[in-house]
Amino acid sequence: MKLILLGAPGAGKGTQAEVLAEKFNIPVISTGDIIRNALKQQTELGKQAKDYIDKGLLVPDDVVIEIIRERLKQADCANGYILDGFPRTVPQADALEAMNIDIDKVLAIEVPDEKIIGRISGRRQCGECGATYHNEYKQPKQESICDVCEGTLIQRKDDAPETVKQRLEVYHEQTAPLKAYYDQKGILVLAYGQEEIKDTTKEVFKALGVEA
Ligand code: AMP
Image: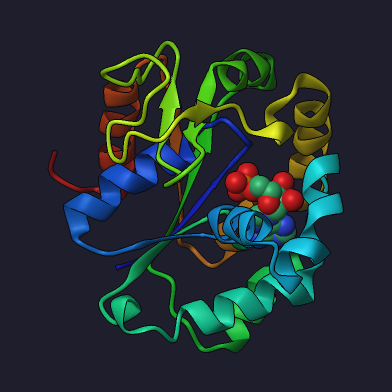
């Protein structure tokens, strides 16, 4: 199963990707996580990406395409994967196709813009392992402490409201056209994001034709 998740920032892609990864026993490949890790480790990629991420802009296509090309060669990708946050532009989608990768389905999670800022303001992430939480919808067992590694939960810098507005604009301009791109190929399915995570998961399974 090779799946692409599309959706605005805060639509719930990462959360649903985790659920699907467990269901299909395949990894989630998140370019955002890979880039954030590089930032933390202060690698060359991290240095290149920092200004873009901080401003809510996309990292240049050639940089992310190389990240994905290398990542998909790894052994854990042999039985499929879920792409969360890639492709984000038409040139990235073209590059994926040029790698001769056959995507089974592209799932777009739809959430209206008015809801995004509120949803994102409650998001938290473990500063150590990257696990994600939400103040309302996905609370940790102990306040501000990661259930997985006991790291401290933080708010992503690019989740600040001004940056989210920019990221939403970028989404509509550069990423939303991918819905038509994949619809033309006959592999696009839509799921509508709900208030509760479990209800969105139901929509996602229905859209993918998967038994809960
Ligand atoms: P995300 O965690 O997917 O919201 O990504 C966070 C940030 O990483 C984005 O706002 C971009 O700056 C960068 N990024 C992640 N994936 C991509 C991509 N496929 N193309 C360009 N930039 C990306």
